[in-house]
Length: 246
Image (cartoon, rainbow, N blue to C red; front, top):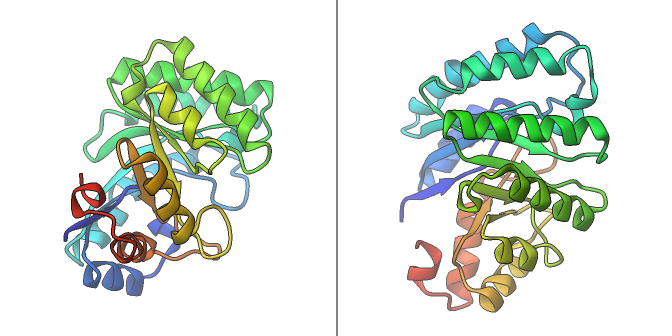
């Protein structure tokens, strides 16, 4: 089976990870722009980061037979930095049309501030303007409330719900996302977020329609092979190949 990891931060991973991913059947990935662990203080650092996703990282993946795509966006944490936020929005209006960009993201909420909401709305408008899907990050704290507010903003923006992927879902948020018409992403992690057994139970309960899994692997404790490992767990649980790879 050819596999696809739709959310993985390879800029923070090693070439050994690329080798292991291809060996396990991963042929394509999407790397969302995200918070790099330390706040950036200049707009130019965002532009350099975007260029690395569009250039170097794409080339690095190709050396291992993996197709690399990316999403570009102003992440929720850094929307609260007034010194850079407007400049990054202006950058995005130029960069979203570049080859290899498949969506706007990660956008969404972190602390659910007024600034986060404002730039969430602005980036939804950019997605509509550039006719791109949207990748929405749901907050680590108070996830249910953040997810509900995110769905409200998506609905109010006028973007088609099927163009939106709400990510990092849990048992608490999945039903609401599926009811909305958006796609539901699940990040499979070693110690937090979502595990393979919990993911199996969700697919058994809700089916596989509009449900996506990813590793969201980054510089923290994470695993770039969580997609193939979850596929193995699905098979062990008797979930059909048709549901695993719709």
